[in-house]
Length: 145
Image 1: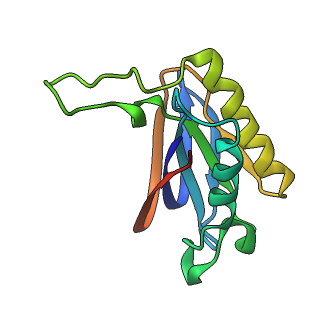
Image 2: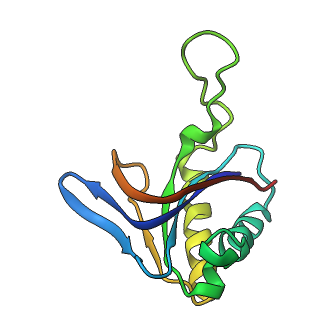
């Protein structure tokens, strides 16, 4: 499982002209979490990802999302598993199929909520427009097996 965690002051996801998820957190900052589920991920990888999203000290003042009471906008991003070593067209075979990935993304969202974190989400499998105001900019790549 891979994620790109981006520190933001605001972020939103729009599908077919409708905002389906948004966060605004100019005081605390928040995270836009782009998460890709891999075909070979362990059954526990989602738990590691929840812990990383909640506890990494990447917000202003070296605080975590949990410390700051900051929100998370969680967006499924299978393209994080694109392989680009050969040719000009990425290969997506390392990404988990939708019927496997969607419940994992939902487990991550639920796991974050169980920790008291406000979570907004994109719409799984939809063509989404994601916008964000990045702070820092501060972006971290996270991997969980």
